[in-house]
Structure formats: structure tokens, C-alpha cells
Amino acid sequence: MSRAVRFDEYGDVGVLKVEDVEPPQPAADQVLVEVVAAGINPGEISIRDGVYKEQWPATFPSGQGSDFAGRVIEVGGSVTEFAVDDEVLGWSDWRSSQAEYVVVPADHLTHKPAALDWIRAGGLFVAGVTAFASVRAVQPAEGETVVVSGAAGGVGSLAAQLARNTGAKVIGIASEDNAAWLRSIGVTPIAYGEGLEKRLRDAAPDKIDAFIDTYGSGYVDLALKLQVDPARINSIIDYAGAKKAGAKTEGSADASDAETLAFVAGEVAWGRVLMPVAAIYPLEAVREAYTELGQRHTRGKIVVSMQLARDAGRQGPA
Image (cartoon, rainbow, N blue to C red; front, side, top):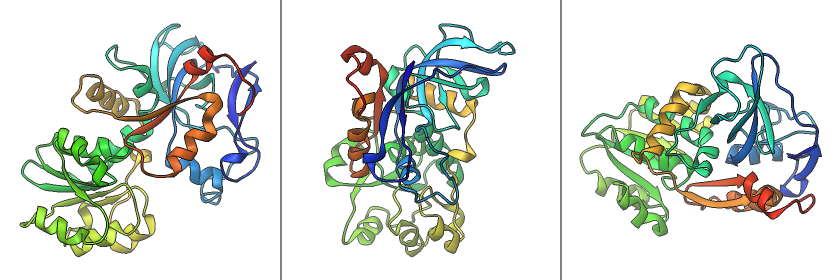
């Protein structure tokens, strides 16, 4: 048997549990991976709460999680790109990565760069490809000014740096506590809250060329007030606001491929993009991990480590 996160009904973190399950078996085009680390993401909270049950209904008992990194244990008969003991990172479309073992199609994997640690590799997929898609959607160019809301979060921190790497000036909206960190990665920090519109105009007196919204809460409307072309506004969360404005909503679904994941992994591995890690939890503490994520004030990613759980020994269901 192996351990995996499960929930049997929609609800808050209290519905989450860690159970013994049968290890998955790979089909001919699939790969079985022993998971070392798996990321958690805000969208998973909304799925578990039932907010998205019309768009993405859960089938109970439901697993959880997309991001993961680990070692190949077994490959299907038609798989030639990977071999046993390869170190990989990838994603699951079946809400199954928060587990000791996961099985996915071979095209959902890429080799882990040797310079990329397990924790960042395990938490990279959703944030990484979403950030990539967001930056690509607004097409920043050298000398332009781009604003990123939620600039210290999992997606926002990566998007801000990918935009910076195009040669654009990046203004990051975040709490004052994150100002020094944003400056350290070449991003101009602006505190959210009352007076934000004026602070942004003061920071970019000529023009704001593009706006990436990773937080919601009216930032699409703010971008319009700042006279940003709707074609260069992208929100990964405010779908209604973006639709009303004629803005874009490109995210992980628009960049979920192994080539994009490999590119972002390389950027992080070699330090061209820094990926902050807010916290690491063992698998059995998955409730605590999502409780912290739900506060929406973390700098970077929260990651669940199966290795921590193995080192600590099994302590029973969460």
C-alpha cells in the first residue's frame, strides 16, 4: 500500500485525509513515479470547496494535486524517453500528485535538471507554466513597463521575473513586507491598499504598457483605469472581470506541455529566475499546508514533501 491525500465530499481543510491506497500501475504509454515533493495551489482550494464543481466536478473519493517531482519506478511498454531511476518533474491531470506514487503519461514529464532541488522541482509546474503563459499573453518588450499584482506569490514572483528578463521594467504589487525581496530581484515594489492607483501612476508617469493580474480583487478594473490596452491585460483569476473588459485569461491550460516546463525548470535551475519557497510540510500535514496557503500572504510556493514524511515515519491519517 501507499499513502495519498483523499477527500470524500466538498468542504474546508477538514475533509482532507491521508489514506492507504493501492499503488497505481502504469499503462503502456505511462510512467510510475515515486514522488519526492508535490506543490499545492490556490485553485485546488476552490475545487475542494466546490466553487468550481460545475466546471471541474470532483469524482469521490477524490485525490488532490497537479505538481510533483520524483524518481521513475516503472515505465510502460511503449515509453522510450524515460528509464527507471530517472529524476523527473511533471504534472497530473487526475488530481493525484499529493501521494507517495503517481502515474502519468510520459508526455507529462521532463527530466529534472541536476542543479534544481527537489522542493522547487516538485512545486514548479502550475506556477511555472501559468507565469509563462501570463507573460507571453501580454508580450512585454524591452523598455516597456509591466505591472504584476500578487508579485510575491507563487505565480506572481515567477511572472515578474520572466517579464523582467525580457528587458521590461516590472512594478510588483505586494505587501510592504515583500518590498525588499522584490527589489532584490529587480522589481519595483508598490504596496497594495488605499491610494494604489496614484502610487502606480507616480511609479510609471509615462505609461503602463501591460498588466498581469495574479490576485483578482478588482485589478483588471484598475488596469483599465490606468489606460492599459485590454489586449495587454491578463488575469489568471478574475475571469468575469477580464471577460467584461475584453482582457485575456491565459494560464496553465495554455502552456501545459513538457517543453514549457523544461524551459522554466532550466531558468530556475540556473538562477535566471529565483523561486521562493514559503514553507515545506510533510504529507500528513496537508491540512496545515492548505490552511497557510488559504491566507494568501505567502511569499512563493508551499510544497508538500513525501521525503519528510518518510523520514519522520508514518504517523497515521491527518
